[in-house]
Length: 634
Image (tube, rainbow, N blue to C red):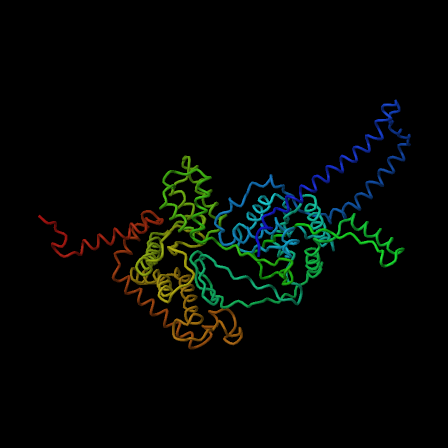
């Protein structure tokens, strides 16, 4: 395939041709008017204005009343069918493709689609191809879907017609379909006037869910940062940022939708499907010409028939965004409609580092944040953050800087902002002395277990301040982005969950209600290991069985509903608890050091946790060293 023809920017050439055509039309009309008026003005016969006849005021009042009444009645119906879109000119959009950061996996494909759009005429006529008309952006909220669409419109130099799919919905029957028709009519008009146009429909799932009796579209598989994936699609393994992830087993490939709303899901979706094929429809003037040609052809023999005007295809690119692609009607994704699906996933570490550099370049900060090490660390601790969340994190850090009277954010401001955005605002409560010591011991048990058994994990926040419904918590995450987990890592996750309960038993000889959430998490991980990953005792997958075979429900219910599966889970959990008991018995000094630091400071963030543990390790080693072991040479 030759790439030469695609170097031509057909959209710009079409825009210039239409501009010149409008200019000559206005010039011709002005010439006609001047030809008629100037001779009369020169001859002393100016054109006078017609005189307004005298009308009785009562007739004016009566006519005005009925006129307003008719306008009110008709205006409601007409306004209900108007398109709710907003038009942005290229010069009104302050985003360019160079401003899109952290989306390297999809940026290249977007650029190719944009090049095809700009060279649509050459691609269609010179190369015989069919231009791409639709792109579907799918992904979690805040991953840059709208940002990318605006950048594409600004880069192409064409109008950007933005609309939210919910704004199409109306209380009047049939008004939703009329709004969709009006939107695409405005889109075609803008494309013909400007040489091209880009449409963007936000949250298209609001009007394009699968029609009754049709299977919804399976979600495209994308790489998710912070979630663990298998080579064959294993889902539900615990992620880092989500905390206690529930096991869900395997999701069905399709969902049958039988719902019908008051206007009819089928009617709205059908209208959308028809309009997505309407870009080559003739204009009003072409219809008039075709009508005239048809009337003339009735009088002409077959060999002298006049040709009907052929509509010229317009350059239009329709972009739709959704975070529920699995619920869309499958007819939307056939070639010619939204035939290209682009997954906007959460950025990986390199993408987050690019975003950190971009945002710090625009926000005031202390010189220490220009250090490469700190920027790499910030990209590491924001694993699972979307671009919007990273920017929000820095805005929260700037708020902290304003509170302390500083001109820019510091690393400490970022750490406290991350704690607030991740685990919520602190809600201090009046613990009794016993409760405070118990909670500090419990959380210290978690932290020491993670420190000793999972060196690949980063201890982020250790607190005994009530946050997000927890009396205390340990937030920890992977040092690097991971997408699979080994049996050793999952066993360590179970052990970390048992660290709090074991610490309570060792130091208090009793157990509180605090470990209930830890047991739920440990049970979930154990069910994944036994029932889905084949890591302990059986190679059978409970997730592959039909829902009713093992009691229905999710994977945990299926494994617990089977006698052998339940025994294997119990054995796995008991082994890990005994291992944690032996570990914390030997390392009581580390639990005590963290407990005392928590009782004194209430919260430890990041490096503060490692510093306390390292100091306790050195002190214990020194106290138990053999005589003369650390004696200096003379």
